[in-house]
Image (cartoon, rainbow, N blue to C red; front, side, top):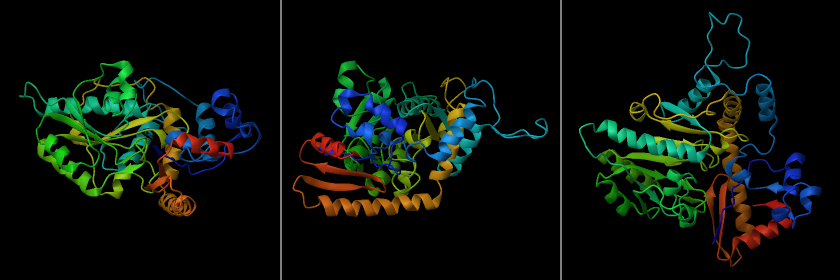
Length: 378
């Protein structure tokens, strides 16, 4: 069994977080230190706390925005929290637009659709892929509606996203889930390309680096082959970077390490470092198929999450920050190899940047419990 250690960039928990942990007698009864001391947190809130806990700049942004405006219907535009001497002569872009501009300028994308979580982002990508196929083949009575995903993948728990997730225990209690999903072995180029070329698939969903699957990275040739096959067949290539994106690998986007680019990318967890957010990034070619009203979300793109995300993104996208992630990741990987490399139960230490995993041949829960008792969260 593998143990995926998803590493945070900051190491200490706030007193409020420790108090919250102490309230859970099931998970924390074995750890009296939850009330007494600090923990070294290597879980990052399952890929959320990209700047650690209670980053000062993030907290300041949240406090400021909460006192100004937190939510308004997305029927209306709202201006960012700044002084405008003459609002009639100087119309400022909304916080949502400002965040979208940052995401577009730093990626392959031309358009951004905001939502509230990673699973919502993947649900949107499912809909966008199908709508694109329908609109790009108007004379075809039965455009492709099926999907390809991969072994060990995880794309979410809502009905469409869970259908794209390979582990049966997530799906069985809710059968039947969305039909039409074929799973290929992650990294099996020949079988996957053969399927794509049948022309029966609306999209391929793939994580450049699998998170829950055990910190498994794709090869460049595998992703290149997917890109080429999708281009040939008209299939949409979707990169799910909900866990591996936004700096965790030492690259702003995990796929940049491979120099292969998707048609759609889904992101979420680390973008605000604290609050719920998700986003679907697409090219103009995909976005042109989506009409107003095709998709929507009540809370998505609200001023609170967008202002927070701008603060977080400006820190994470800084080249010096990304360099530090790579350097710290290398150092930590070396330390893990020194300390654990000689252990017969350690099969592999792998990952990129600070997204690292240790694969064991015994139950990982034993190591997790031992770490917890020593003040280490993994």
